Image 1 (tube, helix red, strand yellow):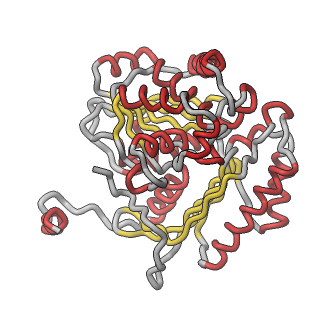
Image 2 (cartoon, one colour; image 1 turned 120 degrees about the vertical axis):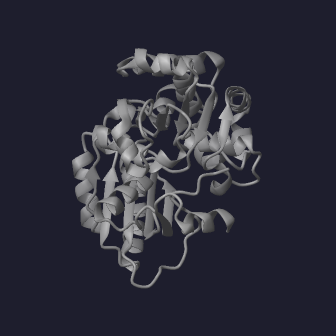
Length: 360
């Protein structure tokens, strides 16, 4: 059963008088916005926006953001600016990630964004990006497990985090970030990997080259002996928060169209993931375009994502993978709302409201 916390259903009308929060993530591949209001100990989305802009297209070869990519991003950010203004959002955090970190003309691009849209984006550090992914996905960690290896396969980087819960009281929400034992940010994502190796027609040899390159980068991860021991005990699972894993989950469920409510929180076993990767690798480019959960926007990127996923799975062969259609933006919202103290206090065990919720 999917964990409903923090809540995120279809956009809903605003509750009068409620403070709204905005979280914007400009990544290497996507521009995404959430506007939400606090609700109990979670939040409810009031408005949302997502568009694939491929800001980092070609950056692996040139070291700079291209003009068409910047134009696409500015257009999408203009829509976000209007949504934030129309909704009267005053409390917001607007971030840019790997493409703007890596590009030589990143600062000039962000100045252009401010001049043309009025939005001031901060370049998020790799450490903060990893922490916020944990904050946004914490509710999907199996509370009976000793921890999870969270990974976020982005367009230009991949964050990997070991969340070590062994022998600890189970924290909730953003408190899970105190249990981060180790993390690494790998300079590889679906856009940069596909730019280097290709994404339309990927042979078996080419796919294995992508897996091997990502695998070598995983050597940067610290604390691997302790994590390896935890995985051998079978008490750690993978937690994937990225377009790659949500796409694979949609394919696994044979959805006629992508449905976040069915994907978020779904569990996949080792054999499920093996079969999914083999199935997608066996598709032609036209087949991937035609699949409703892949489509033309991801058809040339999904195999690069599968290669990164395979490298992670081979390094840390956990028996289960949980899929999260949530992450950085949700983490931003949860941290801002926690800082502001707007969440309802937790009720003590045995409180009548607990029983009411169970029987509702």
